[in-house]
Length: 581
Image 1 (cartoon, helix red, strand yellow):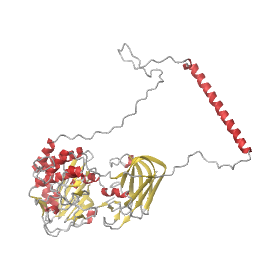
Image 2 (cartoon, helix red, strand yellow):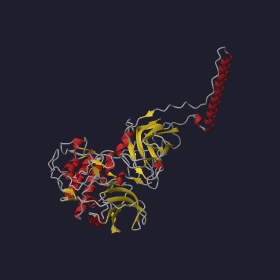
Image 3 (tube, helix red, strand yellow):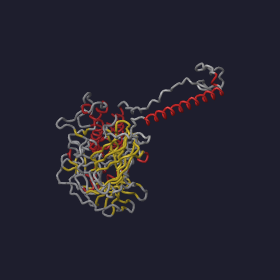
Image 4 (cartoon, one colour):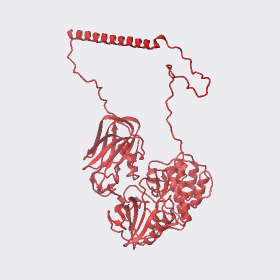
């Protein structure tokens, strides 16, 4: 199912004027350009966070129209274009399929006469020569048929740092790994004369193995014409901003960016431990040394880190931060019983042992412990039980006959079955929620909380898709949210309020083991499923399922027209979710 990015229809607004440095490149790492402090898809105000030191700039040139290509077009009889994810400033970016190696790849496309075409080719070829696995690799860079295109790796199992920070700040060990791996990687790049100049949360990917990889080395800056007189200082400050955001979940500049709230206006740069309590002191000071503050911190006067190598050495000099200890559930205590027979309660004999000390003295069994005695004992017990049952039946029959013969005979009661009355379902409170995206591509992580805030005007939305209403498993099997009920509950029903009506929406409830996206849907227990063409969907099950986490998984969405967030296509939005059980 081809997903239609909202950035695919945007066109850059180049006025020809040289912008301020802090706003010189207001585009996210996936290429979405910002207009008047607001991203073109309407998600959130964002700033690129470029240092306001007058050292980074963009070259203002008249843009050349992007090539008019469509899904299905092939490059070099090998790369089949499938989805346009970016189109601005005369270039476009695509997800494509390498039909020779049967793998997904990314492709940047420019007209051959684009003012930045030559610099993009040079940057891509230089980046490809580096061959460092810590960077997303450039696979090909070609000019042919009036086109310049750059082919790079596509990592479907990786997650952007933007999505990780949407769920909260990173643990100290994870933030330490981030700054350590990124600073070492950029040190290696600068030794080869390569700079990034676009190190934003969207340019950092975390793989399923915990490795951080950097995409767009040299190429992202070349595509947008970004240059710097002090590239090492610019990249070092960008790494400091990433570390600051990872520790505080705040962007260290006044403008909001990448789903993060900026700092209060007019107060300057604030130490991380003054923004959020419990921040690791060493990492907080390291972030301040990397940012443009002349090395001043709340407690020490350390020299500023002006190059990635200096920052990497400062990280290496820190005491190593250990990962959090895994939490284990204690097994139940052993219950020692007094009944011991045969070998129970006595230690096993070891080869070569001459004596064995018994755990406890076992008294000899009473006479009835013999085989004949046990048979006699159980026979007497069975006779007593039979006699008690017969007596009880006779007593009940006598009382029944007495009641039937009395003058106060009551009307006969209708015969009912032995099944207990069903418990009336009650509402279940939602404690937290998180978007579920096993393919590594989230839809709207910041809008998840709007689905259970009680406000019908707020909602979580999907992106717009070309094909539908059924989603295609070979591209994106579905979209959804995992809800945390705080503790295990008997879940029997759910009510889902939808923004878009039409044919049709299909949703399924699953019992999940956590809010993580690493657990596949196929391993979860299905609770209920349903389809609707209205603005609401009620799901119920006859057998309640006991679980703490519930996944609402949407696999079909109706067609809807253009709105303030996305173009026309198959899409859906959830305004409210309620569970009962």
